[in-house]
Length: 481
Image 1 (cartoon, rainbow, N blue to C red):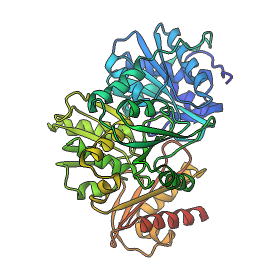
Image 2: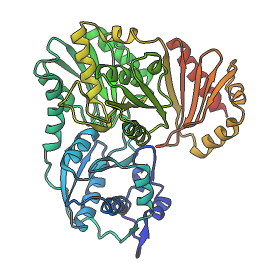
Image 3: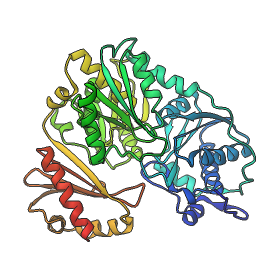
Image 4: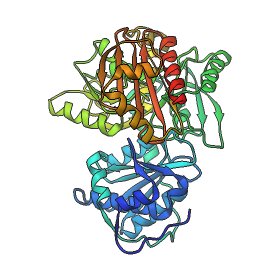
């Protein structure tokens, strides 16, 4: 990627406007062609300038996912850090939560090069303070940072340091203990996930028998909130062929789990989160408004706080709960990423990790399934029977999405009519997008993606078929607009 030269001082806001690389719900993302060396260096410099107002540090950790563009982006970030007089610890290709854990435990900043689940022609940067993810206030401060020109790439990335990967795996071996998953037969859907080797190794070290499937040399943009029809069929086929207890996978950067039951049925991320929080004896939850209402209906939590969609908002919600004196606090998103906001009295070795994590929910549910001698499908069946579905229209301009929702926000009934849904409005929630509850109990929620030009649709009903039908109907009508 060739650098676009800028003369003199400038601010990150100008870089963002010129390049189109911008902050979304979590981190900065853009087209690979726009993420030039200078753009990546500018974001890195602004990040460091913002953190130096509150923290003292001499090292910064960097890690990458397996996108073909990630090593070059990391190299530009590392050269900028060296230009600023900082030592770079290159952690290699590891899951985002592994980098976050290392940065937190080492009390240094971290930069993760990843586009998560979005297509490989895009990429991004996630930033971690020594105490966790950057906040929206940090993003605003970064955008106002005055920057000096980048001297250019002059050196390669340092040698890979395995310390972050090893510490991440040890976290879960300490949590469960040796042999905790003995007797379980698991399949790992590897594709191009950055955790595709770490996950099988960890599960084997915990005692499970593991089969590895569908490793890919090209990047596969797995979205755990919108599982493709092809992947749904793969799950059913693999379960039938291999007679397994579960299929395990993650998105590209390993912070969102994709987990099936023994039948090959993929579990919804918010159901995985609900079961995990209950297994950990969490008392107070912060979750996005898009999550399944079975969370409240389960009666398992003292308080459930609903937030906007995106980990920064969930983290802010967890912090608010902690200020009220809550003893055990966690959060999760509809994509399944689990955020541990506090220590957990029942599991004293488990340190907080307030960023999306895929491994904690996977090992928690597998261990619970074994302890209770019940298949994962039985754990899900014991919950209040509310079902969610979601999908998205790709290449749907964000401006168009916002205009539609603004027009409908004053008349949600008009939205239902436009979607050709024979329903009557009983409640409206504009916390994030437009979420309409119908008198029938059905829920339809539309929201522009914060990371890509996509319009997402979430639906909830009393059956899987009904929820899926709502999403299909809504997206078909939206496409016609």
